[in-house]
Length: 93
Image 1: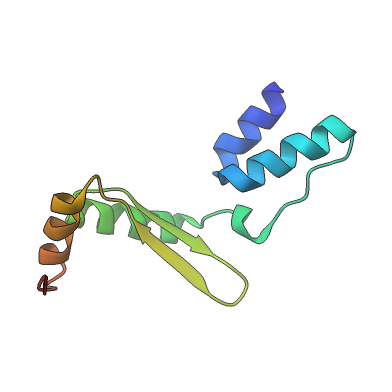
Image 2 (image 1 turned 120 degrees about the vertical axis):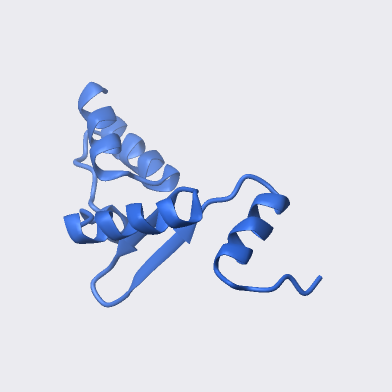
């Protein structure tokens, strides 16, 4: 269980990937590495940190084989509006 916990933290496993790993571990099988669990390169980690600093929130970057995904966390609707303003996007509502 400790090894699995370390893997979850080190690889930043999603909840779904963690659940799958637990099920496989309970069956005695070795957990698979999904597309989501690829290691983040130092360059992408630095970019995520810089964007997060600029937006004053947590930013995650996930890189797949052919494409990537960037996610920006926000606490509530007011925080989302603040982030959109920082990005230069006007709120149309």
